[in-house]
Every structure is written in C-alpha cells, then in structure tokens.
Image (cartoon, rainbow, N blue to C red; front, top):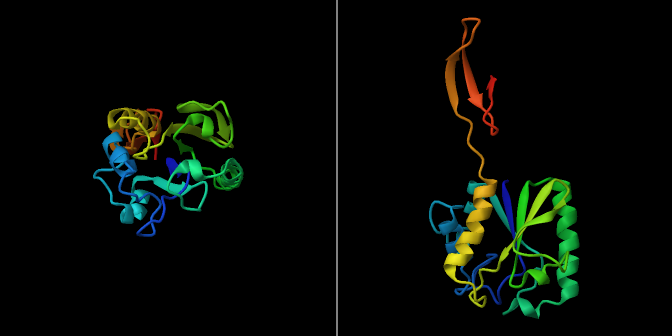
Length: 183
C-alpha cells in the first residue's frame, strides 16, 4: 500500500456500510481529481480503492453528523490504537483528515501537509478534511491531495532487453531510483 487514508469518523447515519458516504463529503471527488483513481468511485465501491494501492480507515467508528461531536479523548484513543496497528503492518505513508490540523489526535502542532514525525517507517501527512462542512475550496483540497499523490507515486518497473559487455542479452528492469539491475 502506498497510502492509507485515515478519516476522523463516519458521517451519521451512513445509508450504506461505507466509510465516507454523506452526500456533502467530497472525498471521492477529491482523490479522483488529485490522481489517486482513474474515475470517481462511489462510496459503495470503497473496496476498489485497494486496486490503486490505497486503503481507507477511521480513527473513531462512532458515526456523528459533525466531526466536532467526537470527543478529544476518542480521537486520542483511536490515534493510539491506529498507530499500534500501523507499526505492526509497516505501511509506507498514510494521512489523517482533520478539519483543523490542530485537532489531529497525536500532536497539537500539526499543520497541513507532510509531517516531521513518522510512525515506525511510515511517513505521516495531514490533509484538509474534504467534508462539505469544511470551507476549503475543491481546488485547494485537490491541490493538497495531489501533493500526497505526487509524493507517493513510484515509477513502475519497466522490463527491457539490453546487451551487456559480456555479450549476453539479458532482461533488465529499472528500480524506483532509476538504476538498472539484472534480473
């Protein structure tokens, strides 16, 4: 997985069993326009997000109408639990959606974007909440999410043929760093 999207909590009450489904939430539109998906997924298609090497979860399972209804203790408890799970599964990057970066459960000094902290080897990002209750424009949301997409995009290895000095024709592939290695 290249990214695990971690929201605050589900909207209330979800009409279908999906993480992000209230009609005012722009998550699916934002991640599509930012480049994570080839098309805009519907909330009930959330499992297809795995095809893009992305996952989705929540800090708090209790649905509410607004994220401000979630107690700080619930956020902290959910954050501690999630960090433990994350360390055990070793993901590369994840992000936590927060309407105010200062409401992020693990630090009061969080700002939007890439964070200085890591969880194990995982880079942490904080991005603006795509909820319709958030005043951020769609363009600003897409730009913030695109920065994460660009930072986590890795070139796909390309198999090629080459003749080495020893005269053998070998298949080679490029590593993400651009170096070539013999197969």
